Image (cartoon, rainbow, N blue to C red):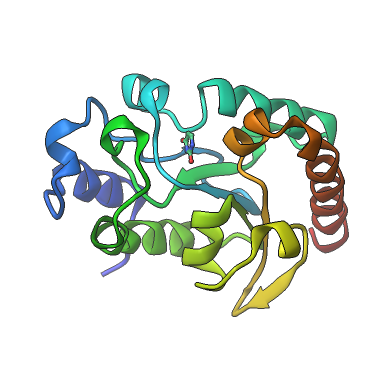
Length: 185
Ligand code: URA
């Protein structure tokens, strides 16, 4: 049977595979253009995302918006999702069992979207999607082809809020992503 965005969202809403569904306010399914060529994948919803049901709308999200704007990638033309669809209490790191329980939803999103480029936002997303031993400080901004997808990782915007001196590297990575998009799309 062919998957659909509606079926996927409904399965996510009903999911009780881990305990996070008990403490979340809203499911944070993902937002953006369902035909986007570029998918950004973060880690897990925070407080503002949990309250609104939309990924990357808090301080980290606003910073991500600034980088997207700086390199002329309209937010509404990409798709933004997370490894976890429900907020971990106190924004703790996702547990391996929670990641495992949620990954199939992201796999289905990737299949439905069929993006050309996947950008991991931060170490946790890169470790899950690119390489379990991914070294974000060394490898950020490099591109690897995995199956049909060109994949890269950048610093997580929340990390940049704590380490503003890394913003220059982020801008360079975002420019390289924009260049890739413009060449292959
Ligand atoms: N951090 C994430 O990884 N995802 C969000 O949606 C918000 C903050």
